[in-house]
Image 1 (cartoon, rainbow, N blue to C red):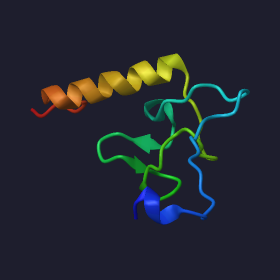
Image 2: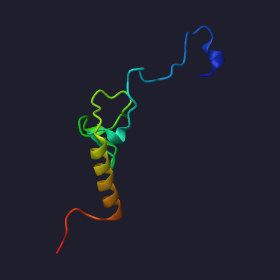
Image 3: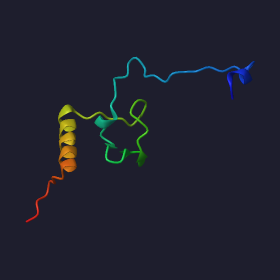
Image 4: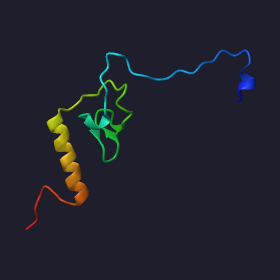
Length: 84
């Protein structure tokens, strides 16, 4: 449908944005997000994004660094368990 077919029809564009009192969110910092498959443990499915998610819970800096370290180990092939 082109603009010439919208004559007389009310329409508008709206940009989705966060509220002024909302802090900036990053879905990698959410406690319920698994980045290996873009999965949310609370929704039992694909993460819809952190911007307007009601279940978003930010983790502390220490927890986030630990999560990144575990991801780095797995990507290098290192494991937490040792085989003898």
